[in-house]
Image (tube, rainbow, N blue to C red):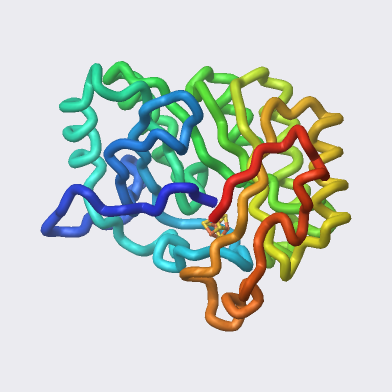
Length: 249
Ligand code: SF4
């Protein structure tokens, strides 16, 4: 789901085991200007994801039992040294709401004086609702990957559409600042699908919808060949959905 690759920027000699009290950290980007519009933010990638998207380019981050590559303490130590230099911290993944340690980790980050952003696919709407109701999140970047009835074509999980669209309703009902992102993949999206999707989002009141070009690199080898010579405008010409922003791979 991510925009920035989880680049490891703090080396750690001993990888920590998964923990219920601290999130398992799969990567850290020290500073990003593109992951939270208008904000200078660090991005913390948490390990594990319940879905297996066709275009996922980060296989290593999917297994929730895999150990992290640095400790949560190393992340908070780093953030403590960046107070006043960054606007916020984004929790990304994988799927950050998979971690039961996320709410406490957010509290720590807020305690250091940072705003908090969340990149999520919304697989657990009630967890997201709780985070929003508790005022833990200042901005949400929510992936809406397909029409609800076709969601499983992307994620491989039939029930994923119901969950993600319920999460969208939760984001809109909360009034939190947000962006909805759709990664367009020509193997699972037709032009009609994307036009229908973008129109539904607009009618629902989504503030900002971004169409992202799926990246061929890192996707499964048999999937990568489907991208030969393809670009986002082949599936969704620029005259369609003029209100949506576009992001090239
Ligand atoms: S939501 Fe999909 S693209 Fe994002 S990490 Fe999980 S499998 Fe990969």
